[in-house]
Amino acid sequence: MKKFSFIILLGVLFAACSEKDAAEIGDAHFKKGEYKKAVAAYTEFLSMKPANEIAIYNRGRAYEELGEYDKALADFKKVLEMNPKSEQALLSIGKNYYRQEDYANAAFQFEKAFEANSQNAQAALLLARANHKAGEVEKAMEFYNKAVSLKNNYGEAYMYRGALNIFLNKMTSGCSDLKRAKNLGYEPAEALYKEYCK
Image (cartoon, rainbow, N blue to C red; front, side, top):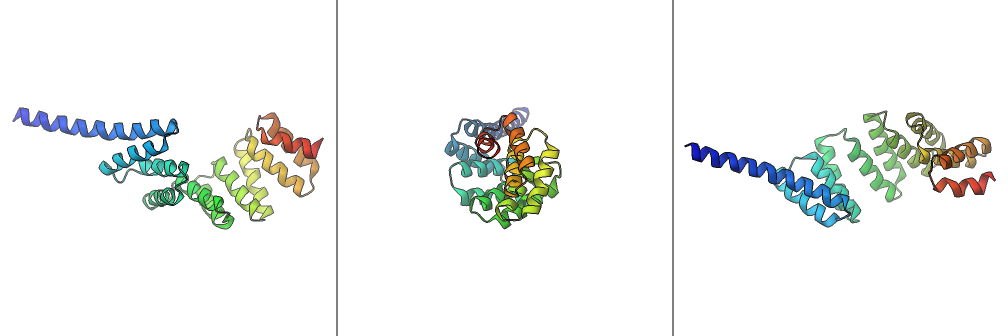
């Protein structure tokens, strides 16, 4: 009886280790840019733990990196079914719409992510960008302001707020933002600063 119990215990430990190993292997492949191998490892892990939200999301990210956007979106939506307030899934779905230039739906997803966590500076910036692209200037400015107030060293947010200010002919504010973005090391701001503020 003891031998039988020990064999069962070994089996349980082996299964737990192999599950953990598959997820960790997926993470390691993802970090190396080996996205096909990451997908395979996450899929293996999910065959044992099909409701693991993190592995589903990570597999979606790997699909995204491979340009397999439909599969990525299916995984992100699956995560959202499991956890309707998953900021990462909402942001990823929003980015999918943004990539398709469907800025209204992108903004909708980014807004839901920001509502889930009003301290998420990335969600504020992405919401601002989607509104900016959709021509919703006031809302874009509101969320650029939120992004920089949440993260005062957010070079990307300063650059885009600066660009919007310049578009609105507020040159002093725009150039101040571009200079801040440049000084924070956000390289794309350098060219804009030279073009509009020198």
